[in-house]
Amino acid sequence: MGNNFPKINKKLGFGMMRLPMNGENVDIELTKEMVDFYMENGFNYFDTAHGYINGKSELAVKEALTDRYERERYILVNKLTGSYFEKEEDIIPFFNNQLKLCGVDYFDIYLMHAQGSSNYEKFKKCKAYETAFRLKKEGKVKHVGLSFHDKADFLDKILTEYPEIEIVQIQYNYMDMDNPTIESRKVYDVVCKHNKPIIVMEPVKGGNLVKLPPKAQEVLDEINRSDNSHMSNASYAIRYAAGAENVAVVLSGMSNMEQMRDNVSYMKDFKPLSHKENAAVEKIVELFNRLEMIDCTSCHYCTEENKCPVNIQIPEILACLNSKKIFNDFLSGYYYKNSLTAGAHSKASACVGCGGCEKVCPQKLPIIKLLKDAAEEFEMSEGN
Image (tube, one colour):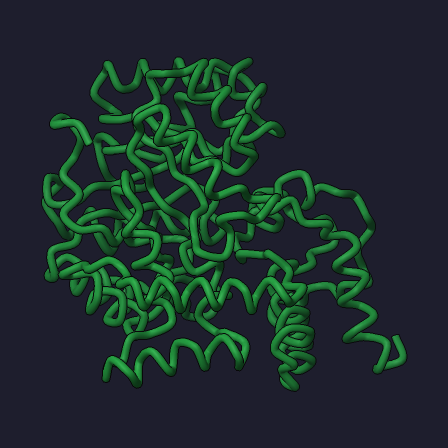
């Protein structure tokens, strides 16, 4: 990274999209505890967006971080999301409101959010990139980047049209390297070709690389036994991503102190995967490829950015479907019922097929079909 870039102390970033909750609200006291522990151990990178936790993430950033720490002690990243503007004139008021909500005078990095073929033309038409570059000249943004959810060729197009982009956030984990929908390897190569530093999102694939199928778990258990170590499943995934060349920081959406302490334990003095650990990861990928897993990362774009018209909690239902089909979790039906009662959400069978969720899904999932599958799996036995 260039000398003018903010100094990212260590390679673990605190993603503020899965914060601990107390009912419908962010548990601010626990969030403060997590922020303090993270900062005390030398980390300084925080990532938020206006839509995270239904608008509550930015407020939590202010209360837990920016009201309590001197500005130069942390790096704060925010994003311009397409659902919050319709014309060029909307962008500056929205941006100024983000500054106010976060309690800062500038953002260290401002990302054009979730860029891809579905929204890029809107960003161009509204001169979103040009507006962000102007904000940089005014000192309200230190660096402009983008987060990306599409194929490699499209990223190459964006970075060619806007070479001023300074940093790129991509989905990168050991399961998605050759996933034809995500194209992590090809996307990574494009960023490197354009010589941009990389922010990694979804290193544990929305938690899917934490709770592994039994045969995959045996692989990591064996390596822990042979090395007399106690490394968590998340540690292998996050260290895999952090070890890639040009990766500046790996985001983790931590939601409790246990996750925070675990991540800090192996990222404070980061060491890439060893040859033996890389071989274990490759074996896990082979095992996963024999399964038919739904690639949902629980980003909640389908519910928070799109607002399902019948209030279906799509990520939670797809997680239940994965648990049932991949992990044969007998509690998946119980969790499915919980996903309905928490907040009076609709059943999978209530889907009206509007397709709004599929338009914003970064993983390009056939959500309408998957909801039908979930309805068959969890509702038929109830006679519904």
